[in-house]
Image 1 (cartoon, rainbow, N blue to C red):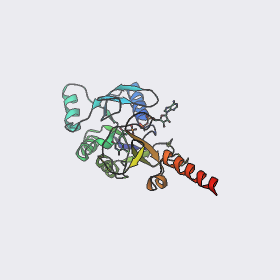
Image 2: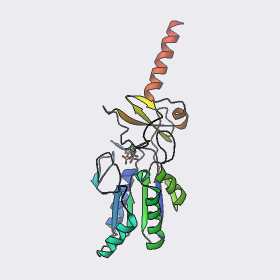
Image 3: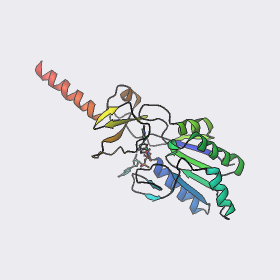
Amino acid sequence: MAELVFFSGTMDSGKSTLALQTDYNYAARGRTGLVFTRHDRAGAARISSRLGLETDAREADAATDFWELVAEEGRQGRPVDYLVCDEAQFYSPEQIEQLARLVDEVEIDVFAFGITTDFRTKLFPGSARLLELADRIEVLQVPALCWCGRPATHQARTVDGVMVVEGEQVVVGDTAASAAVVAYEVLCRRHHMRRMTASSARQHATTDEARLDLV
Ligand SMILES: Nc1ncnc2c1ncn2[C@@H]1O[C@H](COP(=O)(O)OP(=O)(O)O)[C@@H](O)[C@H]1O
Ligand SMILES: Cc1cn([C@H]2C[C@H](O)[C@@H](COP(=O)(O)O)O2)c(=O)[nH]c1=O
């Protein structure tokens, strides 16, 4: 029985790696799949994992109709067994419904990978629809950690190093330290709610130490 599975986890929890492994294992057993992504950091029509793997994929843009695309593959004599859909948080709710319909009516397995919430802790529309429709939700097994050592559950956006809670929902970026103006940092809920990133925690600690020196 085909399934719509949503593999969810914070940024940096291994989703793209798992997406590539899933495709590899199914293809190795002779099954035919299509691999999609949207807005990957590596650029259009690429899937990249921080473990160093990177491959071609199909870019799912706003106009992509998964139902039509799979039907066309069939008409061309290339029946599809499964879809791998990375960065699925960026897909529209209608596109998630097309994926569910492919599972139910054409018996195609769909493996979707994505983060659930944005930098404000609000659900992405695509992830919300996946949570509503998926047969199974799998949480990634190796959590990324907050600076305090707890498993991370949320992601903060920083602009010039300062955590922000307002702005466009979609801004492509990375968790790795870089010169980029916009970056992301995974946090536990407690520290997301306190707006405390690794850098602001260090600043607090330094200020507290300086106060103690004055006493
Ligand atoms: N040099 C490394 N050695 C071992 N594991 C690594 C290394 N770099 C990254 N990783 C692993 O890769 C994970 C991120 O994988 P990735 O697929 O890019 O995540 P996601 O798609 O969820 O953002 C990290 O959580 C870490 O476990
Ligand atoms: C929290 C958040 C993230 N994004 C972007 C940043 C990255 O380009 C992707 C997530 O990639 P990953 O493979 O899971 O590391 O999403 C965003 O646009 N808006 C946000 O609020």
